[in-house]
Amino acid sequence: PKEKGWLVSEMYQFQGRWHTQALLQGILNCQKQFEAKDSDIILVTNPKSGTTWLKALVFALLNRHKFSVSSSGDHPLLVTNPHLLVPFLEGVYYESPDFDFSELPSPRLMNTHISHFSLPESVKSSSCKIVYCCRNPKDMFVSLWHFGKKLAPEETADYPIEKAVEAFCEGKFIGGPFWDHVLEYWNASRENPKKVLFVTYEDLKKQTGVEIKRIAEFLECGFIEEEEVRGIVKLCSFESLSNLDVNKEGKLPNGMETKTFFRKGEIGGWKDTLSESLAEQIDRTMEDKFQGSGLKFSC
Ligand code: A3P
Image (cartoon, rainbow, N blue to C red; front, top):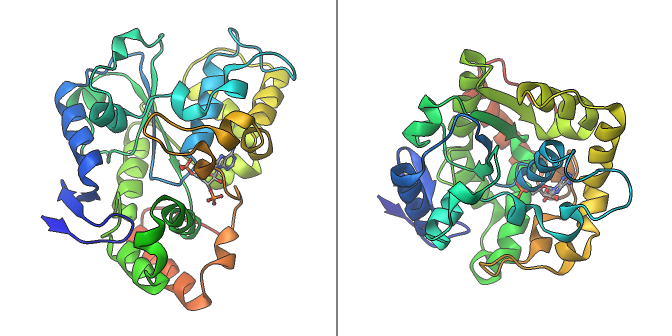
């Protein structure tokens, strides 16, 4: 079924999720064509949950012997936007059908927003690893709200935020329902902790080094020196990445400006955009949906 919705004029529901036509096409192609390898690493997020940051962190971690993360040098992250270093599965399957995944160096590092249920069969059946990053829903919603305004100013200009929050809570939102996406990966990480690692934007922000070491251990990528951890934290920080020319002035092949991926990079920034009652509406939905799961967000 097709519905009109905020941010995109039409959304399509597939396997319980709402997608733009483009991303749905990408997901369908990906489901049919993508063959996962046991050594693959797949980063999974809801949009606006720290995808760009996670891509940078894991890229820097995996390549720390090839590209030094110490202060100076010619690290690829200094001259290339993270989205160009780590391919977006359903985006590539929609926009660049000739892209050859077999040419990616091993271990192949990719990202997706695909729900756990809709992952290509080979991702589930192989021993590839999934790092899932979740963000508290109020900050994620607000980040997407501002992103939508930059991306589609005309369509979003007169759209009332009350209606957008309502749609978000009901799940009829791009990539939504947010709750189901998070819960599926949360449950998968508890059922199979060697396959799925669950991290949060908030933990990444509060203790970036600790989380880098947790990701490194999960990915079994060898001993990591404290100095390397510090180098990765600094190289991938919001301050560092958002001030690079390539991220301030660059464009992705689909025309998207790289600066749209960097706004505030904070925890609790929703307070500037959401009224108390809208925040409560999201909180109530979150409590209801996450009840009994063990998942909690404190901001
Ligand atoms: P805000 O809009 O709240 O600032 P995604 O990468 O999934 O699209 O998410 C974008 C969000 O992550 C934006 O949040 C952006 O500012 C934030 N972000 C991008 N790079 C970051 C970094 N290196 N550290 C922390 N937050 C970052």
